[in-house]
Amino acid sequence: NYVSPTDPGCFNDITQIVEVKPLPVVTLTGLNNAYCITAPSFALTGTPANGTFTINGTAATQFNPLALGAGNHTVVYSFTDGNGCTNTNTKSVVVNPLPVLAFVGLNNSYCESNPAFNLSATPTGGTFTINGTTATQFNATTLGINNHTVVYTFTDANGCTNTLSRSVAVIAKPVLSFVGLNVSYCANNPSFALQATPAGGTFKIDGNTVTQFNASSLAVGMRTVTYDYTSPTNAGCFNTISQIVEIKALPVVTLTGLNTSYCVTAPSFALTGTPAGGTFTINGTAATQFNPASLGAGNQSVVYSFTDANGCTNTATQSVTINALPVLTNNLSVAYCLSSAIVNMTGTPGGTFTINGTAATQFNPGGLGIGTYTVVQSFTDANGCS
Image (tube, rainbow, N blue to C red; front, side):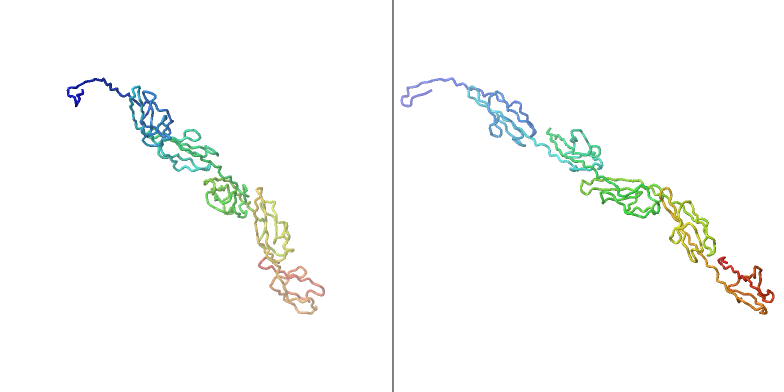
């Protein structure tokens, strides 16, 4: 309606129809409220189609959680219809990070002899695989010498799954061997230092820690020698070996028929001992006979040595005294006159006399008559030597 300000009578009126058009109904389709950061990228869609998208104000056609990163992201879909009317739909989408995983107590290497143990990781509640097979324990012995892949998989409350992988080596245990240890020893073999390769371990005999093998201090029978070794370089690899060693009893050796003393005039005789078949020495010289006359007065050391079927040698030693004959003197002269006085025969240290084999106590030249007579003085001392 219009009235002219200068010509009050002038008036006019016009009418126009104006249409107010509705905005298009715009929706974001197929877009969840949250995604894990590892979710695959996907194309953004909305209705009606052919609009434009922005994420955090930046034009986009794809929703890529990994590229966007963890956090809240604003997705806007804008659409303009044929009437030129534009509308938008906005959605806040959370990108959740993956759970942070860590192995607990898992080394990079183990010895094949190490004991089995339970696998552990944080956060707890996930699952383990070793070389693709579900597992709860790491058992180096059954896994064997090689590199093994341990994987831990965990899904958090947001449904985000992460995995943690580690290559764990199982190392061969050290190869051990005794050096110079026989399967048997005689009870009187000399002591020696125990040796094994590699050096640096610990020896035990029947559970007692030792450094020497001393047969004479061990009981006769089967003894168990053990060598324990821990590698100083290979993840504490441990190994042990053992060997049964027999301590053989010595043969029981005796000298038979040998007295503790003889007179120097005693007859020679064959030396004997048990078991038969051994060897004798007298004062260190090989002998088969004991001959007092040739040995002479004094102490003689007689040793009998015998080696049995096991190669074990034992000896029996006896000290034998050879006693000299007593030294005799008497009061007789070598010649007398027929008229000489009768002599009462005496001697030192004493003894008895015979004249031409007949016992006598006096030498009577007048009674015997002219001739040569054999006078014998006999004496046996405390050692029985005559």
